[in-house]
Length: 310
Image (cartoon, rainbow, N blue to C red; front, side, top):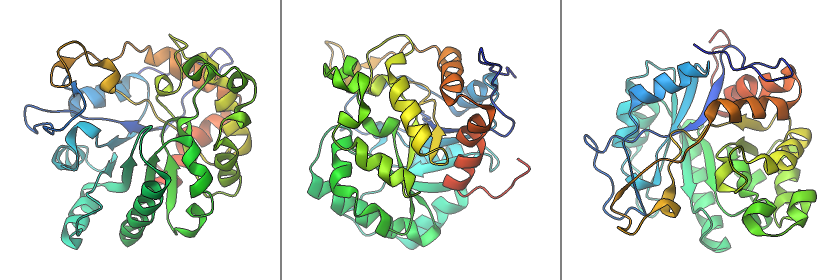
């Protein structure tokens, strides 16, 4: 096991969590025929090896979009981790959800439902799906995970505090930097990003967690996407107890990575220096106390982990 250590002497703490990874095993669990892209395999064994290599004991497996609402790969992978990992499922919210299915998912280690719109969809869709998914999450005290455009938090702002469940926003809440948008104001003042002010307010009032994850979704500043610093530091400043780290391993390229062959041709993963990004994240956290919140204390609360000795 490697102990990742930043220049300031900050280290990944014992019992650390990675709150966002994917497992892709298309040989055993076929991908959705309607998928937007075709990633290579990323097995559970590779996932466990990756987490060990960076000194992380717990991870949250999120069903990737290429599986649609078929959660078989997620449930099977969770059952192989001996209760040390948690999972986030994706459900067909237009269909009736069977209580026995939810119980099976919970027993396997699922602790969240994901709504995944990326940069698409309408406020009406986000609101309806958020309310519907929250009503399902309440049954087993699961978390509601949102990947929606950051501007949508303007309409979700009054709704999220009423849901009665923990809510987490994926990937910096989708706050894009100047390198991604071309808007130089975003590099100086993240509050100029529509929806960012609402995200911060929800964090301040302990209604919204945000994942410090997948920087390439919001920045083109390779290799470390360091222009996200102001966004990361602002989120941690205003919501120190409401941020969690996620690696987004194995770094799928999504539909952006499709080549001339189209969405059904297998694509490479992104070339990401996980160790360097992890070190940079420690430095952005600034203190070992905040590092512990980011990697241990906050994810324990978010994912309902009650064992303080692991």
